[in-house]
Image 1 (cartoon, rainbow over the protein chains, first blue to last red):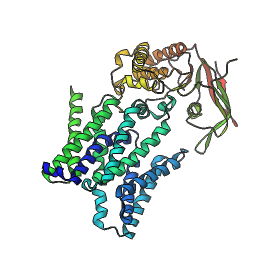
Image 2 (tube, helix red, strand yellow):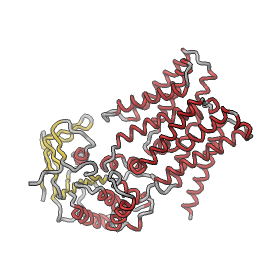
Image 3 (spheres, rainbow over the protein chains, first blue to last red):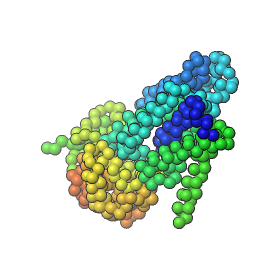
Length: 269
Length: 216
């Protein structure tokens, strides 16, 4: 099994998965706590549109997804700035428009059905050197963001209005979190695909919420669960000869199940 | 004469299609303790959120003469932390998050505030597991950690039993006076609030004007 790790595409995929496993669940914590679930749907559809456009233009799918997701985030910030259009309405509208445009692009640009399907499944072994660099840079930026601003971010997670009156620029942090979510989802789509993205971003975050007693522990546990899911999921996929995304999801789901049992037994005691 | 901390001057505030506050003029001065009463839907929470800067007036001027960020502390109707795994210590630390201080000084400050409010033994507990009364005392510690000039409270004891209410308000007045903070308390239920130590105001609507009248 170890001989596979000598192959450069597998090395790149492995490193990209580990980096994402450590950093992306931290964004998942914000997605869950700040109720950004509809935003995540919008970004998944945006990444699909970006990938379809990139395939049509024969450029990096990751680049296409990043550009479209950032564009969607900027549109969302502009549209919801005055507060008269709820974020949920705007994300739903942009999601529907994105998927409609993606279907048009796939049809008109003649993107083969197999390639279009690969957008849904992701492919970590297709990660290029530059994409690995982008993935690592984004992962490092997310870690740094949390480490440096953890106390202020705790306030934003606790209560948006309380944070604002405590002297924290909540709106600026919200925008940074939205941009971070857009970038994270674009990269996750490339790694594990739309269908299994939640196993890398959301499931570790949800697991941490089950067992952590403080926000520091919540961030740490979500990151450790993400790392374990990525590492063990990768090994499992090589061992059982199944797709990496399936291996990561199985591991992440197993850890989630164990944490549910821990919470249940803690209550019983 | 001392300048007001917040001055509403002929302020109009709209929520959706409804003009909730019309031509409202109203001051909050340093160190004063105000209770703002009024019927449900009259605009008390809108007034409070305008004072806090969450809602912008459509017309008129809102002048805030405050030291800077964090000078207004806000204790909302209910704590919206939900199931966030946050410790009591971390909740109080939110009040200090915009202030520059070393870790040792921060820890001492958090301990002192929790002790003053009788919550020192709860420091490591999860906030979500506290009773309603404990949560409000910890939230008051968070507000005081900001060293605010004005404490703004929106129905802080809604849903709490009378015994807890009777203990909370004297503690609030004592702590606010000790920290030199003005208090603006918005409530429709005066049960458990001491008779003395407050200036009582009532928000009313009259034709094309919102009025804040002194009562009792």
